[in-house]
Image (cartoon, rainbow, N blue to C red; front, side, top):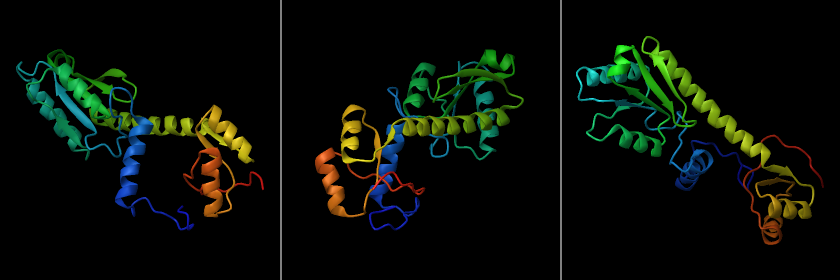
Length: 212
């Protein structure tokens, strides 16, 4: 909610709100290797990287894989550039693409591909027979995993405070978020900022009484 207690809807945002959402997504999920994007908002959800693409049949197999995944209405990119596989791995890791799918001659012999998750770095070899179901399941797992991790971080770093002194102590010693009562007056909000060094972030939709 805003300061005037009117509901703010997520798709009726100003440019300022939009850029803050992007910043929040980057700060919440990303790591020292670059972006980590939730599949729901990632411009590219799956990148297909052919291994030893100069060898017969590899690019055909990679294109077939791309077509199968695009048929699921997924946002898929095939990188058949002349860059090395290692360069491509680092590039799409930095860009936060949720899943990287690798396929090469040895994979083709075994009717498999290798899938790497951006959020955990986990790599698994999976059969091409059920690749559609596997990729959808893994994207759902990435989405849920990022949410659960962020929610856990929020809960573990939110502290209920009944007094101004409690707010000052928690913020000085631990940081995070103080959950406390507010009368709704700007003067009181500014006083909190002046004395405790904190500013308002949101009004929880589920209200509770913490003190007077």
